[in-house]
Length: 317
Image 1: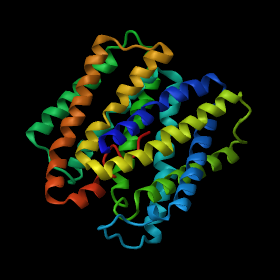
Image 2 (image 1 turned 180 degrees about the vertical axis):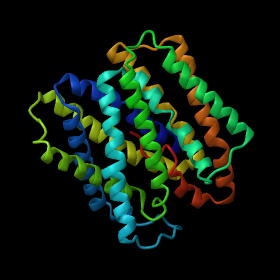
Image 3 (image 1 turned 135 degrees about the vertical axis):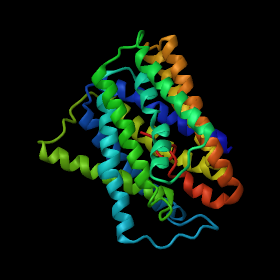
């Protein structure tokens, strides 16, 4: 059941770019999309926590201290600054480029997290991981240089990479609070912080245009319910059953889903060179996740479950 839940989560996250494309076609602006997505997701997660009080507590066998005001403020800031910025870059890029290419560029973030963790002294660089990083870099280069069948947009690619960099910083900061809060509580606080930032921005800029066609509301609901709330809840449920190693590897299914759905529904396609580059990136991500997670699972299974919430698979775009 655990692997199935992780795959469902990856599929839900992978469908988000497709829902976004359809929402744009229905007249939804990026500002409206982001505001409705985070506001609705925060409200739904709040309802989930009200209906299931057990999700507000630590898992059996875990020992979390009562979170301080600083921890709560950091969690909200993760959404207000980090996640809001990352999502803004992602959905702005989505207006300029194909969903399949955007997904592959965004998925360089696990590699960026590994590099940053090594530079910060949080992880170590082994020969195998060095080879994986070089392969991922080569794959990313092939994805960018192999633009043929897709509509490549330099500014869009830059925004997509900026989204990956921002998400990398978000993950590294989240690592400082993930042990102090239950995962669903942390997710709700992040969504609330993002909704607050976007709401304040809407007030300062004269409001957000919500006067679009009914299909737009349907696709926004899909993004909030399927690609945010359901994706998060199924990931955490799968994570508890599989551990971080399996969950991290299964998350590579996300860009595969995006690419397949883009081909089926939007008529997008990747060139053979880009497909090869994408395969290199995804394989490298799997290699980078396996070795450290094996050691964690062997030495401290309970701690490993907590640590995984700070892995690149913890919350997708």
